[in-house]
Amino acid sequence: MNFAHRYANRKADAGTYFLGLLIGLFLGYIFLQMPGNNAQIMREDAVYLAGTLQECDVNYRNGRIHSIGLTLSDSDKQFVHQVCSSETLADTLRAIPENTEIVLLVHPSSHNILEIQVKGEVLLEFDRSQELLANNASGFGVLGIGLIALAVFCGVKYIILEIKLYRT
Image (cartoon, rainbow, N blue to C red; front, side, top):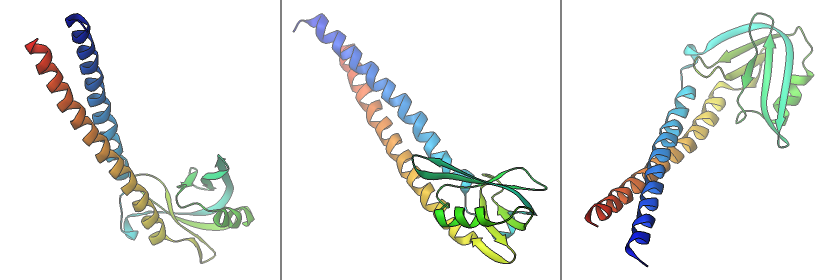
């Protein structure tokens, strides 16, 4: 292999590692920030919404529940996060007649429904929703840390290749 060919390969490798550095930092930062929207809150900090049920909309993606949307008489559509959704909950909500009084506790940042009460019966529990959302968020945190670690690896490899290129 001649000098020019080795130099071109090293330059291309350095560009690849630099791109890995940028993508890893960018995506790692995004994944580390994602859990913040669903951060744990106290029950009293949740937004209290009460009204009559106007519509229950269940959305599926790949054969699984993606979201459950509830529209109350005095508010915009609110959603149950997919990790808190289940077929049982969806069936129960679909069976509720329109204009039934319903009470929701909603997360103030993510606007996800954390608790649903109908006629005093709790259909979705606040503490269970918080637990499910926290478990989901921890997965994103691990992914974010992994991407940052990959970015550090790419950054070190990039620096090493640039030093080798500088010396030649």
